[in-house]
Image (cartoon, rainbow, N blue to C red):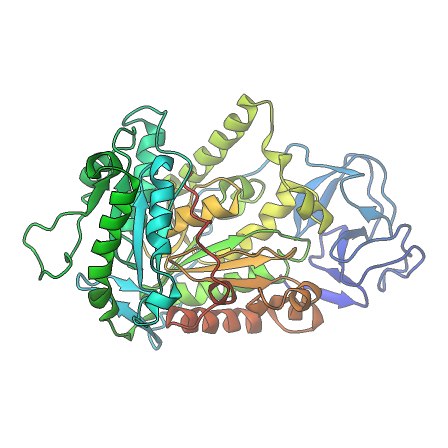
Length: 511
């Protein structure tokens, strides 16, 4: 994308019949150098027609179809939900037809990470309480509350004790799809390198038995409190019914974690290759600028990480719909590309079962920010994946075992999507937003990137970086390198804005 600017509009591609309004237009204002004048008031970040568009004609942004005109649209007219419908796209997937060459390898960078005894690399150092079911959630929170900052001040290398609680864990088929997915997610957090030690805390009679979790995912503690490495290490499991009630369970779990503190604190950061970073890329509260500034800048950072041998993940499969043909071309094989299409088809079928369609997205806030159709949102969202080959497509929370750019299946909901990427192994998250999402996800740091300067300045306590400067003349590449440097710094221990505010205890959301 090589955008050209002319006063208050941004033209993205020569095939486009719209431009992006970079400074709100009032009726009668000139539309850049097009010779047209605004026929409506057009908000910042929204689209304005730069040529006449007939009824039924495609609306093009990024050179791609984002919808179809429902009525004649004149140059200078506001282009949005009042005169655009998503319609049906006819896409050529051209599987594996345009596989990018591997980027020139980079190996010159390290970050200060935590090397676990088994070789895994962490960016943070937490103790986790893994709640198997909603019935043990309160007890788990009581345990975590016993380790507030006044306690942890004596253990400066510990980032926190977190209760990973949720609203499920029962009333589904034992061993069924929902049970297996929950167990995979819980196990992904228990095994995450940022979790130095954990307790599995259950009620005792739930469907999501702790024994199922530990046995199906080989959960073990590498080191028990006060012990050296064991030839047969065992997970720490407590069930409230077995222990004798909430109070006894909380007291016992608190005592066990208290014994863990000195050992978990006894770590040091050491230089490790950037290839050990697994980046989860998320966009939420998006606006019309997200696909122009923040998301493509994250794509540059993603490409740099891939060149260093690292991994970059995007998710939210319904928000790939409309842009999937650009990804299937980059897939390393037809099988990888077909798995993505199979997932999108599943989501279309799933929505239809409930009388809906996959284009019920964008959200109210997205539309207020200038996004009109799911296709437009998707084309901007996939920009986070950069330009390298698509190396794999994974189920929700499945362990990611390949380097490079990959996709993980998830709904289009920030908390669930990030939970899945963390369970899959992400140890840093970048989160782009145009409306102002305030997000964190313990035990992994989240870097929040604003797509526009007004929101960045308005929510300065929540935003880590401002990609809105691209609208003021900075290059996407320049901001992408800035994001890469921030990723390295945060992976090395620098606190993000969400961490500084303690955000991240409520965002654990298994699908």
